Amino acid sequence: MNYDVIITGARCAGASLAILLGKLGYKVLLLDRSQFPSNTTSTHIVGEIDIYKELGVFEQLQESGAPSLHRMRIDLDGTFFESDIIVTQRALGLRRTEFDYILLQKAASFSNVTVKQNHKVNKVLKDNEGKTIGVEVKSKNSVSKQYGTIIVGADGRNSTIASQVHSPYIYESEMMRAGIYGYFKDVNPLTHPCVEWYFNQGDIIFCTPTNDDLHTILVMPHPDHYRNMKQNVKATLLNSIMKNKNLRLRLENASLIDGVKGIGPLKMFIRHSFGSGWALVGDAGAWVHPVSGTGMDDAVLSAKELSIAIDLYFKGIKSWEDALHDYQTKRDQIINIQINRALSTLQRADQPLSAEKQAWLKLICTFPSIVYDLGNKGSDVLDFLHFKNQDDLKMLVSLEKRKIIHEMRRNHP
Image 1 (cartoon, rainbow, N blue to C red):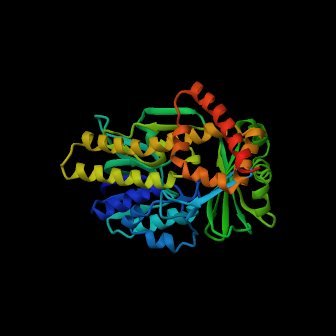
Image 2 (tube, one colour):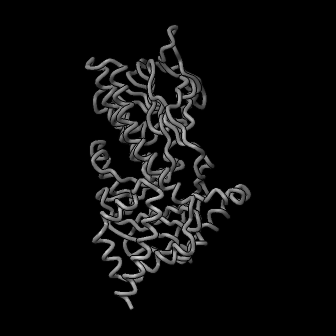
Image 3 (tube, one colour):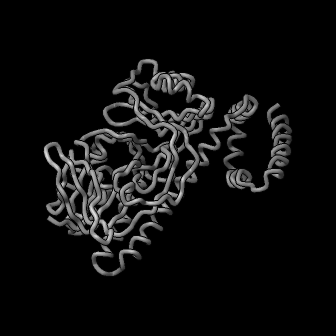
């Protein structure tokens, strides 16, 4: 059987693409080497709403048992900042075992979408002119060849498709921090569930309540701690958590389940996303460090853009080159924002606050009137923080310190 599109990889990017193409009436083969539900390394945060309504899974996500998160809490070396989240109506803390399975079941509900689990793609098939025309697939008892007009690699950061079509890198970062995480039960909950960030002695900790009354705690250790991590990953995770007194109190009665998962130090990248008969989506085409916290949404949004491009090509409205060039441009717009955010966050965390700066922060938060003044001058503070000339910035910091001390002494004797 010849398919319009063969998608290798049935997690959030691949399954979403299959749903969108299935709705458009295309004949799709969706392959994955795993048997679902199954887990994968992830940050477990879903923030978008409209795209999941379009996919027809919004209600299932809402009913999955994942807590709805409306607030953000940031702990900067023991000093809390907390507020309503304003970039989305809500975030969901949802394990990938549930998230991917909901999408896979939706894809399988279309009569024109064939789903095959436990099917691993071994090889890309090409015609005499080098055009990709299919894949060789290994299942438990057989090896088969499947043919399609378009082959899409949605098979993760170590994509077989990307490797065999020799997709070049458009961008590669320096080596990024490792990220290790575990699921904890019996964590003392906050009054209002939050997306929680902890910057602690150079480490970054990302904590979210998730379904099944669990909390996911992701630690991105400072590179100086990698030696200990190599010796004992679990100890590195727990030691980083326990160094933070506020988080430690939350875990008084908690226990780690299912072991520790994660990644070592890796480079972020963007690959060229298409060629003759093939395209890439999700982590196969671009991988962003989990500190961005948006990988699941980014993959699904990129799949939406790819579905539009494929539809325009099949309808003869655009050539393959033009349609996929538009897709790549839009995908890169999504990904570059997250890469810049990830780099910015990690660069800041690489320079932990000194004891003096921690004291300043605690002093500011001790006086409600100063916090109120800070809120009143929020736009001025942002302009100040983004000042371009570093020498002038240092001078301004010195002047501002003097003004702050003077005002504090005058208003708070």
